[in-house]
Length: 248
Ligand code: 13P
Image (cartoon, rainbow, N blue to C red):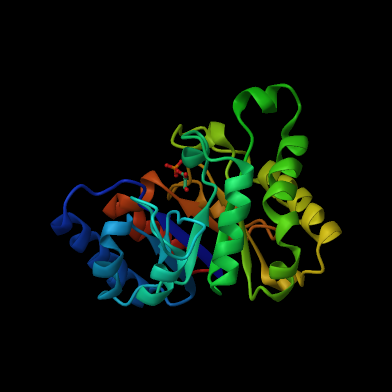
């Protein structure tokens, strides 16, 4: 069974459209029961999404449980709502100034509240050109996870999403075999540092996944699933993506 995580990002722009999209996910989720489907709408639509009986992820969260933090959403609130997953360290958030230190604190807050983190890592085009991919990934993983060793030991599951920054929203997806090799590297970094059971580590690829290329990603044994951005809010695409994933 493979995992599909639908990251709506900052879409759609009305509650009505969000409801239509969520209704389609509900229907397609029922049709394709051999898919671990996780939907990540904007915070504002999470409580609406709850009514559609979908497994939900938040796209971010803060690292404190409550207090004077204007504009932030805590993992405690997400948990109370029935959200089980939180995407942490997405490159679009890193570009807005989120540091590895903040990401590490967020991972801790998520694990402390017994939620499941989806940690995103990935190199930029420049870093890739300079042959620094592995070095960058290792730093991102170590800085996010090392301070949380104790929490990780007790974690039910953690998801690592390899999302090369140059592949996000560009149509220029990573070669699936190359992605798979990089994900094996990521797995080795984690296993070398942590006493984590491999079965608790879920490896996800993200970056320009669509109905045409998804099959080649899901074919790779190292790849447990995909994180879909742009295609996740296109109705025809999401129907095809879930049908293909259902055959694994
Ligand atoms: P795209 O699928 O639009 O490239 O986005 C990927 C992504 O960032 C998922 O989190």
